[in-house]
Length: 128
Image (cartoon, rainbow, N blue to C red; front, side, top):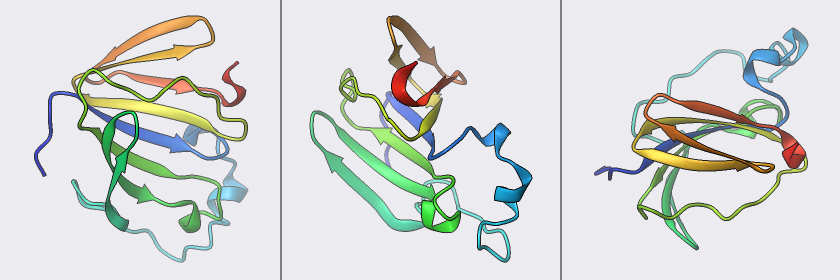
């Protein structure tokens, strides 16, 4: 898959940040063994092409179905350089973004942050 200059990897956590997941949740995912997801592939649904205010390709790396709804990880490739997702707030999930290539702007409350290659950001639920 050809990737443009504006690629961001989205690691969306459904309930809580990865580093704070209690051991009881980790041991209660319903999965009997681990699994590998190859680079450039989506484990579930293949490449999902999203169209709206911008074009993206979304690969589901780990689904909420894999973790009883406790965690989901996505890789998103933006195909619309200079455009991003409109400002919004998630009421029930935190998000973590990690930039693989290019740069991306985020806003948390009144604070605006620019991320470049290798940077990451934590966005708490309810935008606080």
